[in-house]
Image 1 (tube, rainbow, N blue to C red):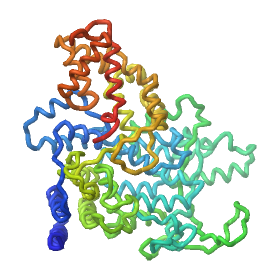
Image 2 (image 1 turned 90 degrees about the vertical axis):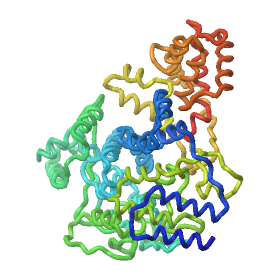
Image 3 (image 1 turned 60 degrees about the horizontal axis):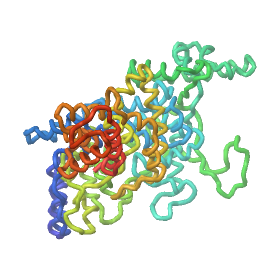
Image 4 (image 1 turned 45 degrees about the horizontal axis):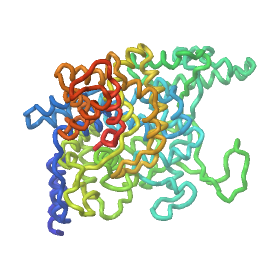
Length: 597
């Protein structure tokens, strides 16, 4: 075994930085051989199709996609499917949702659609254009400007009430470093000290966010500072206070970057934000950096003082986690830009590893190193060797995010069946079989719309307000199906609240009705066209499960439809659609539908 591992290490340590799917497969073949693990079989085309659609674009495939994909004879069809999905506009939305949920965890921000929606648009725009991941993170860490025109600033702005929390969150999410414990005391198990924590926190000591009326941004850019003032904040029209306020706005105007959102997206965003609310009450936050201000390590033994005054403690200056301190070329430099540059530097030992480990975890159910957010101190029996190699590949590729997804999804490791070949306890940790993962709330919501055919009806009803309607529906849906544990589980465990929602949700039952459009109507028409219920049943199975029914399933469904009066001896009847609706409901509320497998 030792010989095989040494040979493997030598292969991965080759000078060429590029990693291929075959390299990853050889790594695991060596692992499986050395540990007596037998991998599962490769999944069938239909299973791969559904898995790839859910992982890459966040929705189940259409009933037409499944037979078309199965009928293709090109050996490279799976690779071409991956490329097609990575070019689909829904890719940015799906992965943007994942990043949004990962980054905007502050409850006040998470509940505020006026802040969340522009952030979603910016993430989708950035990911669809394949903005290099290091540049995306630089924008998040050093972002300035209005959180509506430059939504990347929302990440920092959400911590305005608890700036220390930003330090721990940023280190965990972008570097895979668990430093938050060092805020109050030296870390008991790792090397991080309080000075490390506050040295990192010092990069954010000068951040400030200023409320500005949303409709006043254009005036602010034009230097019309009076028009950019809140009517409610004119402080009794005191001239001195107005002048101070105008000076602050003048400083803001000098720091406003060009909008990050594309012009059409920005115009739609402004229209949405202003809808139904007086302009003087619709506000945004402008994130800027003050020219002065230092962080302080609080003296925990000092008596409580006035919160409006500087806390007692030792002043600390910015310092990177490697112990080095930046040399400022300009005393008024944006410190966050310096931090972002250090974080995303090719030599940073944490940055690329943290992202690669997280992407691997999303696609395969668990990270190469567990826990996912602690790559700085990997435990024994991990795949740190492979993670290091993939991280080097990612950096040298120019932090090509889509390229990383393409690489992992193209491996036979990603395409393994969820059924274990043996009962070896090591199978799961060695990725010898696939994993079952409950759908994320956004995946489930979008997939229900797709599987029931309700998207078309929603667009017909919503018109210009379609995105507003979707957002409101998704907000309610997420409250029921959000997953707080963050842990992958081999079994699907639905809650009572979720079961009751699926049982009683009026919107779901409306989408299942046999209206003029939708999946149920399509199934009924397919049955009449073929003169047999089996054709309609097959359509429902393709819509819900992305596969055809087995003969046993088709027979059981036919017997149910006969009993409901929707069919007679397997032939469809007019005027009896409820059985078809109930059949589809049973499918979209089943574990097979609710889980990505």
